[in-house]
Image (cartoon, rainbow, N blue to C red; front, side, top):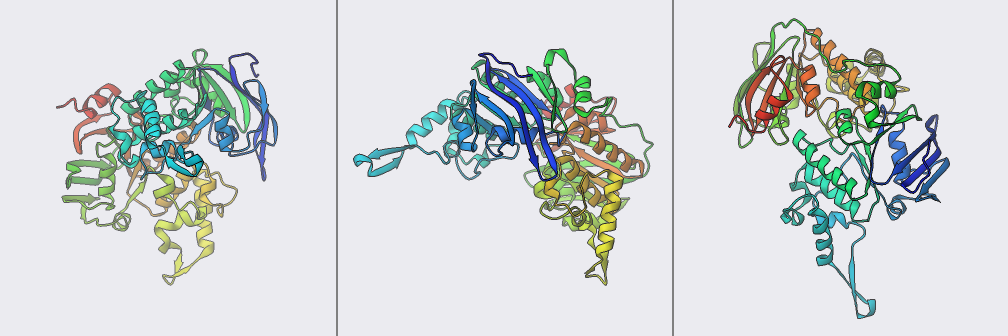
Length: 508
């Protein structure tokens, strides 16, 4: 139900949007009130992305009405949305990495000074810098960052620059799509403080995230969607995580982050005294059959560098790696695959899959020799049959295995990557942020597949910034700080507090 009063900045009534064969939005209504955080929640495919793209001017609605400050509007494009005071910070970074913060904030709408009656125009660099500095000081006291390329500043400051860019157009509504996706735990807290400050200034936030715990720290209301429909809108103080999940998925899910205890077997991976000049120092760990071993640490602690070193993506200075007790020299990811180690990377689209290729080709990619005849002729039927088998076994939701991977939801993309590695028959799977950008229903499915893998004598190494996920799934957790493993916890010993203590350098 749409509320009609002076506090409503934006209202949507009966919004419908169809794509060929799919009704993405079905008669959806919502309102956005001044100075609130409205959390938009639902599984992948619920219609959240379509809705925010309509508000952002990237899609046009098929029917329904949009009102801004009580006036009916047709949002023509992204620039028009900005003129109406709606700015969007998308999940995928949109900053130009080689440009400075100032250049990014004013990219495409630079300010010029006119001379000689308008015959000469010069870029007003000082004015743009001063305005960007004013916005940036809302978040950080130091301003030397403004003259550096944003690629040198880290994930948190990049997010802040995107917020500054949104505010520079005098946005009254800022849409944030998975804003904490690349942030460590302590950086998320900093961002949350910024968001609360924006609320106090009267700015409204439409917040999209799969991290339900963080939503309860920020949201005033939840707008729940499922299958393209608006299910309900509920105040945050009138619900809890279990009830919210039930509304999102249409069924109850309890203990959705929990690994059952599985008897451990032989050691499948041991890394000894691994060093990487200037990055990693004396990394030692092991994994047994049936184990999920976690790596915790803040951004920049060396977690991803450790993973890349193990699979041969980056060169190491010294150290040894043993798989099933046998020392293996891993100089490239190909060596890792042949040794029985697979990696599901943090960035599915960049490093995990060839998203412009179809599902079947992605699944057989790492072990293409298994569907070749005479070492170079592709057996197309074998490729398709393999993909159909994993589609069924892993519950990959796609109309056909010939569908391009980029058209699948995040959870189903992750299943395709997992199928690729299962087809290679690995002993060890490494998950780097296994459920980043995945909805709660798909998370449960990924967790179940991880559990199934270790039940079948596999071992998993998992890097995750989501501490409840890490605590719920791991049998043991290694904590990293500045390129070193500084503490190991058993499942019983590990808590969020003691992990953060060591991850923050408390052992020093």
